[in-house]
Image (tube, rainbow, N blue to C red; front, side, top):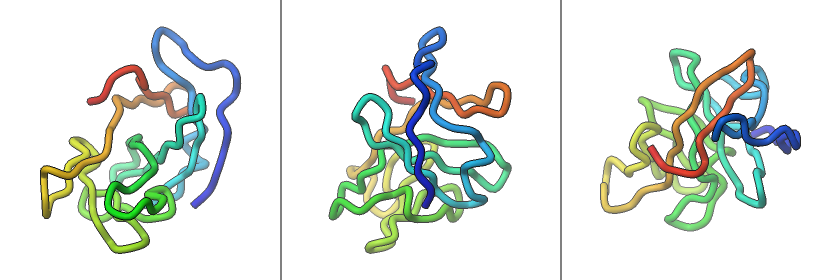
Length: 117
């Protein structure tokens, strides 16, 4: 897990700047605090980013300290997985984390934090 605090150049047309894509490890997570909100930025196998809330709903683990497997963020504490598109836990879809629309502009990861995907 790596960590960064976004610049104050916050919202661009509703998109919040979070970090440089190269700060996010391959198949891993990067911890970002944005407006007092802990977030996890992940890099999928196809090199595209995904953004979720950082706290695992199971026991409070930091998802950004985990890894990506089969399109899911896997919590390092108890290996609970959350789909990076929907946020749902494949083993129990009633449990989920928030996911956010994400894009890359000029090598920077941005997300729409005002709404979930």
